[in-house]
Structure formats: C-alpha cells, structure tokens
Length: 168
Image 1 (cartoon, rainbow, N blue to C red):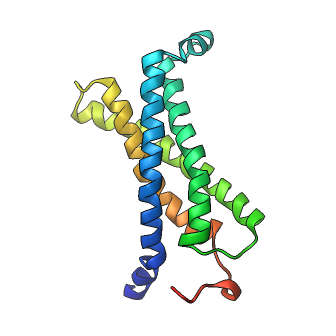
Image 2 (cartoon, one colour):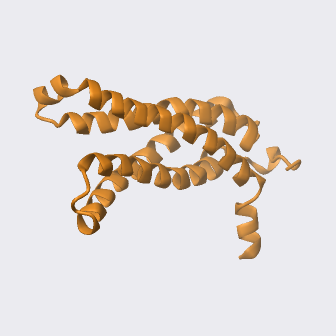
C-alpha cells in the first residue's frame, strides 16, 4: 500500500502539479475573464433568447470550454515533454489526450454545476447567483484536476515497459 502511494505521488506527480499551476493561472485568467466580459458586454443574449436559453448558461459553458481548449494545448505540450517524457507515438497520445480532456471536462463540470448549485442552495441560500457560478467553475476545476491527472498518467501518456524513463 505504501509503495503504491509512493509510486503514485512520484516526481511525475509533482511535475504535473507545477504544470497544473501554470495552466491554472492561464486558465483562470481566460475563464473568469471571458465570463466577466461575456456578462459585462452581454454577448450571448441574442443567441440565448433566440433558443429560449439564459445568456448566463451560454456564457458559463463558453467561458469554461474556451479555457479548457486553450490550456489543453499548453498542457499537452508540457505534460508530454516534461511531466511524463512520453516518447511514444504523438498521434496516438494526442488522440488519447483529447479523449481524456473531453471525458474529464464533461464529468467534472457535469458534476460541479448541480453539486455546487445544490450545496449553495442548502447551506447558503441567500448568496448571489453570480458567486455561485464563479464557485461552480472553481469546483469544476478541482474535479477536473484529479480526473485529468489519472487520465493523463494512466491513459494518455501511459508508457510501455519498453519506453519507460528510468532517469526520474
């Protein structure tokens, strides 16, 4: 059990955390910036009203999706080359990486939104809905990070015994 934990929390884990900090700073700037700008300039109101949606819902999904699209490109480059030192087939790892990001995004934000909305309504019912939306994006990021590490390490950049890097 202890050896399994040591193997899980090895140098790759800490490199992933450092890459994640960089990605988080870039991603939060994109996501919260786009959410604020979308809300401030009301970009989505025409599209939303045409389909009977709330502009805030469109803004939430566009802001968080744009964050993950752009930072996923950065994450792929840094994690492939620095964190996991993947020497495997780039096309294969890229396809696996995209699948991993998409699945983690859908799971994380699919859980974060109803969970945070429920939690806040139960324990902090008078909190402004804007704060709930910002908190939801943060909770989604937390879920995404854990899911993404596991997916990248054991799926996207899983190394075979033939190409494992023993210099770590």
